[in-house]
Image 1 (spheres, rainbow over the protein chains, first blue to last red):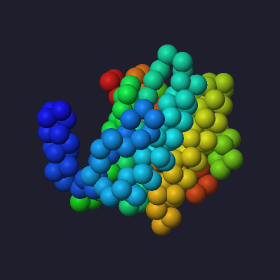
Image 2 (cartoon, helix red, strand yellow; image 1 turned 90 degrees about the vertical axis):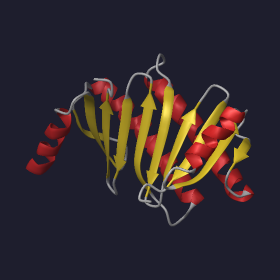
Image 3 (cartoon, each protein chain N blue to C red; image 1 turned 60 degrees about the vertical axis):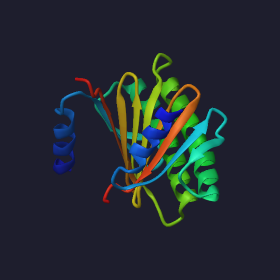
Length: 96
Length: 96
């Protein structure tokens, strides 16, 4: 548990990182550095997006699987690392 | 038109690039370096996924918009650069 905390702290102190959210397999946020309403919004939408992206990857090649997703937008970049039981979401402003 | 060809050629000769597809606003591939069936499959799936990603970004912040999408999988990485009328899709094997 301390290792998790340390990792989150390390990511959080990286330049430009606006927020970190960990969601479980059901899309429920279990840890977040953002306020509650933003967390719930991000968690819901990104969980759905990752599931669809994973299906797309598998549809294109059933032997393949999603390992990482980067959604770059005008204002920031959202990085999602999906795992078996959890998703790690980091929102970063790349220009910071 | 020559500029487009040159750009596609430049990307194609990049290390690890497996294929390039240019998709129009309807999801129809208009240029490709891959075989027909792969192209059609990728174009349709990625067009759909890009639309979903764009909606997710806009739902989180209506002033924001998707600028780039990177889908990393076990076997390769798919990069999608959405524009107003087209999508540029590049499939690359990062380990090459």
